[in-house]
Amino acid sequence: MAKRSGTARRRDDESVLTRAVDSVFRFVRFAEFEILFILFFVIAFIIFKDLTSRPEYNQILVKKPGGPDWWLN
Image (cartoon, rainbow, N blue to C red; front, side, top):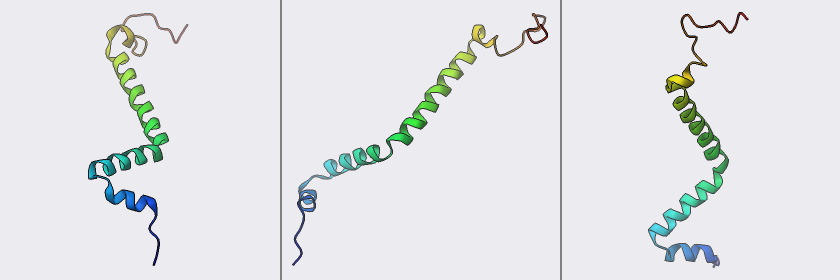
């Protein structure tokens, strides 16, 4: 007869909530780099969107009509 390992018996004794939380933590540990990579781009997009929505910062990205022509000097 096959001997059951300690983790298999422990899994039967744990509640559904404990197993769900353990599986979430296991997934986060597995996909840590991808989560941080996507989070970096989301934060960068939010900061860039916020900066370009303000008129005083937007002037560096959009040429003002009648203003000095920076590219020809």
